[in-house]
Image (cartoon, rainbow, N blue to C red; front, top):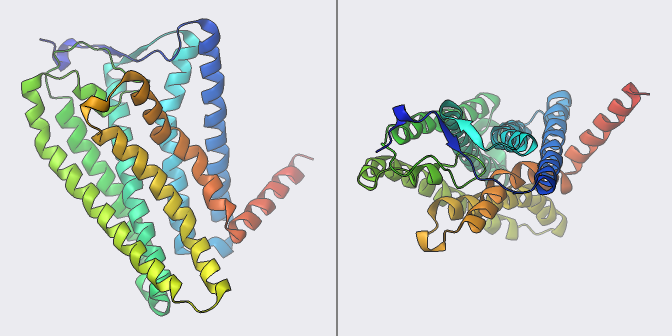
Length: 311
């Protein structure tokens, strides 16, 4: 039996066998990573520097962009380095850090998306009370609660996971230290120790999911009652980007962590992992800026300012 103390490193999944495909993987991930960094950095800078965007909705969007940059930085650079240097090893502490940070950022983003659903609900269903229900102090408290929930859950789950004896070697069938793949290495009788944490995860996940669904049912009911077509269009423009991000985040995350073992295969696990850990951070800035005139105008001014500085 192997246990945590006898392991010095883990072996990650190799995305390619020959040198040409390894370099292609490096360049592909580099492009996606730079796109995510650039898009989210532009949103963070635009919101921070434009006083017109100092509203609850954009405050939460800024937090979402910080989470997206952080989450993609946990997994992609290490995978790129492994492909570039033709290695698959990750240290034990590095693997534990990846699991902790992925859980922390994943849960914090889920909670933040739930808070953003509440923000949209109040803005559309109770607009006269928006200034009192979602003031600056409340926004800071809700954002802090989202980050804090992610941190506490990650501490609990990571400590519990890496205290379980490992009997199945040290080969992780994923390009980063993904929690389900680490648990596959555990002893079968030790998996019962995860039950308590799994119950917490299900309660948290189901509670947030129900809250988001109920919020949007009321939002769409209120929007359909708006008499003017222009008013309905404006309301939908406020909600659809958030709904698209939530749908992408939940569909890929739920499938990755809750799919039955019969559907598991290395190729499918790899595709799903890329979809929930790599694609959303790169796509979210595009989704939020596509239908938002204020944000597009702020981004346009920011790009013009950057161009002027380089001339």
